[in-house]
Image 1 (cartoon, rainbow, N blue to C red):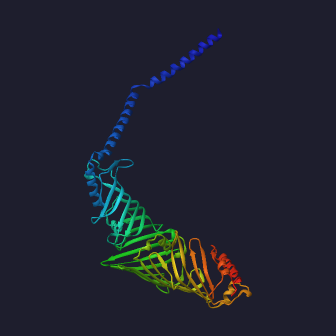
Image 2 (image 1 turned 45 degrees about the vertical axis):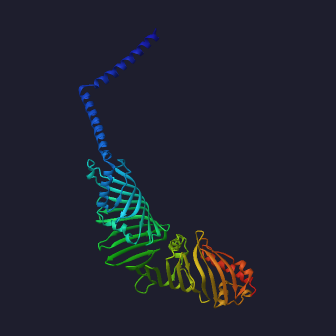
Image 3 (image 1 turned 90 degrees about the vertical axis):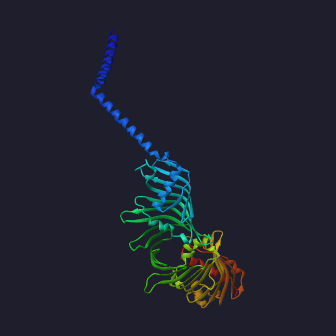
Length: 495
């Protein structure tokens, strides 16, 4: 019985608790609360209605005919960016993430001549007025996967775009190529565009061109604008080869001239030049008074030939021997293979940079059809020997830079050479001349010597020992290694 009463009391407690909760919730449904709830619903409905209207507004460009859109955009691109683009009717419109048209396979012309095929063009427009096709305002243009073909008549195309009134708009070119061609449409070289951007700098009140590119497998960045002197100012950064350049270019009637300040691996220099019709002349030096180096050169475009003459206190041959050196990359790209290219370079130097033992260098070279001929180049090793190159060529073999030729060494003081090599006295044969053929691989730093003749004598043991010389990275290691291998050869020489 007591258990039953206890259970009934428990049920009553549950019932009272439920009633209290219902009473509290029902009391909340007063007239004011019902009005507030209605107001909240109106706000939500209004928001939804506005959102729907906004989406409809964003979709208005889809109502226009594609031919009308194409015609209006072509007019605006010409007026604002001076872009003579022929748009196809393959036009797609999207308002996410912001309103824009996407066009496939457009054609770009300059002075009615086609210069580029553009795989993809994106044109971003302002939200300001989508009710009228005539009032659409272009905010940004992106040209992607384009191939530009430029030659002498239009090579300034990209610089000339700086004359446009960009205002708050921008022009971008991405993942594209520039093919620079000669008068017969042969490709001289290719410049890859990773990201090029034109915009108006409000702070400096000028149009700016910024571009990240790649040429001859060397990445570089360039910034171009017109300065207060109305000259084209460009800043070039090739961090891979530690080269920075600031150039100021003037255009006066038929004469074009300029001056560039160059910093190469912390070394400063000046490059002055002028262009007159088919002739490009330049002077390259580090300072006006008592220069450490100075070069004078000319480049004639028609017919094409070039010559450079210069003098320097220290000749840095790493410009050629280093894997990432500019000249090395130029040779590998085969751009110098053109049969019309004819370069002659003659340089006199007091000694080799970082190796003063080599002195009185006379570098004679010419570049023809992708081959560098250094015949009649000669230099001294201290005052003990004179070295002369003949039948020599620098070229690319299986993707690697190679020097192949003959080297003749006239011994002037063999006693001093033996002292340097620390050759035992019993092996110090009197030698006046050494001749051999060699192949040097710049990538692997390996020299293969053959047909070695000491005073005309061909010694098989000497040839076997010196057949492969593998240079080390460290200069001290090289000295020890070369002394040991040369002394081993002398030990086997029976002259």
